[in-house]
Length: 560
Ligand code: DGJ
Image (cartoon, rainbow, N blue to C red; front, side):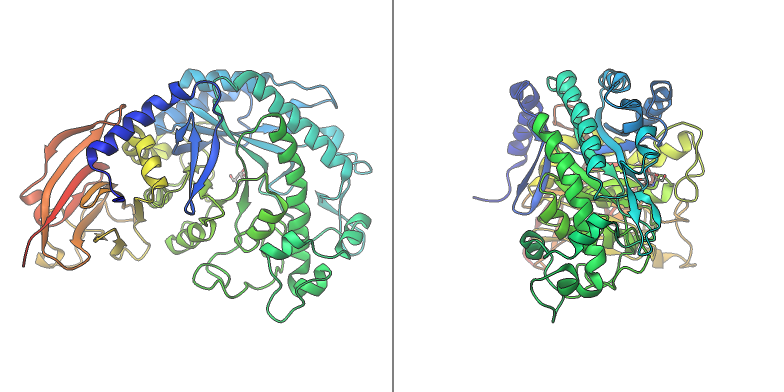
């Protein structure tokens, strides 16, 4: 069967997407599906695109929520990611209080938003700050990691049996509560288990239980996903198999196994998709796509050992099958690094969700690239009007100026987000963000090529100018991007800003536009044409202005 449907069929599918929630009724929980190495998050039975925002760390209290909703509304986001802290739901051992969760879920429904809950338990940015006091200061019962000299680390040990039992008990209580209050409406669509796990400054635990485990043979499941480096024995103890990588890999396995116990127990009572997030190790090294036959240098204190960094995703897959995927937290504004991170985390066995990203304006253009690449979604951090600026990690602003660049992009995707998620799952979507070098980029489409350039004038070519270095106003910093969905053999939905797109036939046949309709999809997924671009508006390519614009383009070829 032809891979492409006619537009009519695609729009009929859109209607299906719209009716799915009612048809799926109360039975269908959110779940992650994979087909041909692509992924979709099904919500109410249909692919869902997360246009998200994450609240600040201390906004997980009812009094803080109004400023969160205000920012989220301004951003036109459809999903809020927000912590639920162990310290707040179990301040005294065994006495649970979920009143904050109740308020949060009720308010999310009132605002028409979905929730991704972030379980801040044993580890939050590797540390125990969000554990209840009865855990934090009782290190006889809840041990910290030990270094080679036996000195305590700040980080709780993944070998703490009582710690695991207590965290698991609290997490299960949370999931049971969610099932009771939300299984019918499914406001909460996913749960992140712990937050940016791993350990800084120490490659692994040296406590007695850890030492004994370190001397054991590497489990077969780990060997299958994370083979021995070239020239090393295929099995044996961690040191024998992995040599210089042994401590990091062992600690990764220990933390992933701990998380698995929590996720497995939580899903047994309420089976929502679950994931982990990652404080990145430096991208662009051997071991990443393009250099997969090599390994990056061994850990030397340069990132959190034990976290789901791109080099050890296989260990997480082996040790934590109840975790659906590992997600990157992107606080590196450089376009080359962002691209390398996206490549590393989008794998046939790992769905791509950008679980966090800086909220500075420069990051907004990456939404085109991320959503275009078919990610489950994207969640800039600090979409929250609490007076707290994440500069230099994120924006200097804490008001509408911070939200506006994201709002523009989200507004373009929002009405067609269900359609887009479906197209992404079908492998029809592509995306680019303007690079730091401002250079043109090409996208290989099915039978077509898109050339995307930046800093162009809307009318004419740059070389027509007397001063070739004169650039269009408003393009002083990189801020362009385009996402393209190929919805038919020669038909495209093209959405973006501050970019010029030229479409040409991959086979070199002469081609021209049949139609270039500007418009939008309505809530039912029906295309509403507002005008047809022609003449000056198409003579120099499709010049997407500063304000995001949606085009439905049909191309035609003719005989030379
Ligand atoms: C990454 C963490 O996961 C977030 O909770 C937050 O601390 C940001 N860093 C920084 O704002």
